[in-house]
Image (cartoon, rainbow, N blue to C red; front, side, top):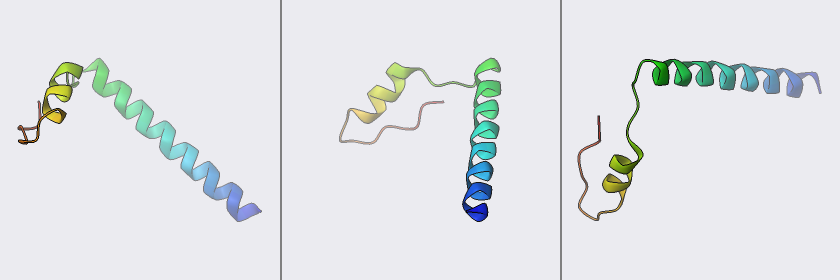
Length: 51
């Protein structure tokens, strides 16, 4: 039980770290427009990754 709880806490800490990192990216404007992603995914001919 203790091992499972430790693993869960580690997972939640990692999730929190990733969330904070993602929010910092948004604040810095490091986002990809939703329409650009849709355009990239809606074709059989791969498009370059939007930047």
